[in-house]
Image 1 (tube, one colour):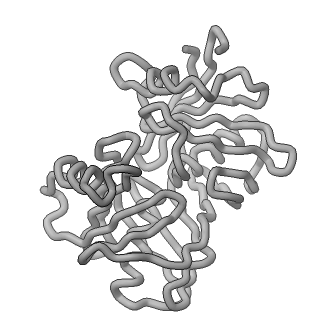
Image 2: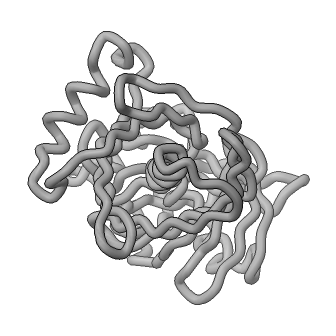
Length: 259
């Protein structure tokens, strides 16, 4: 481990991340205890996750994502947007990029503080009672509810994430409610093991659940409001297949530091 970790803090709709430029491999990605300590909100920097920006000869960069518990995680949509902004601020890219993440290749474009990130295609889904199960780079459970503002998302999300069906591998639990200008979403995230202010792959899954429930087809745009701001999901739906999937929302620099 390097004696000093140079980092940047970014947030995307309230989902906050520690970003480390690791193109010289100074940060030991196997040190789960260090990652967890850095993400700790009382004894570290504090974040929902940590990302390493790695050198990759075939792409602009590679994204390696860690959950707040220190373990390498699946794809994070808001994290993906933040690392794109980080790469721009490092001078690696300008207004467009192609990078590699754990779930494959991602394209993205930037305009001011907004990043439009292409997500993976989704070819199928499953059901658990009335809930929808979708894999959008991370596994998601999506349930339509009422009176979401007053729902105990921690209690109910924790129970689903740790039940007999999902407890072994975990699942992200999303509760969604229709409102006048779109939808309101709240998410309990595995790895963070708490409700977060936003979840990009969760918002993507929730928008797809809306399209499935309403039997929408063609080019679809769905605004999703989260606790930390506004996200916009677009895709083309043909039957149960989702292509040209994009997650658009803010990605903003917060501060730099040394740990």
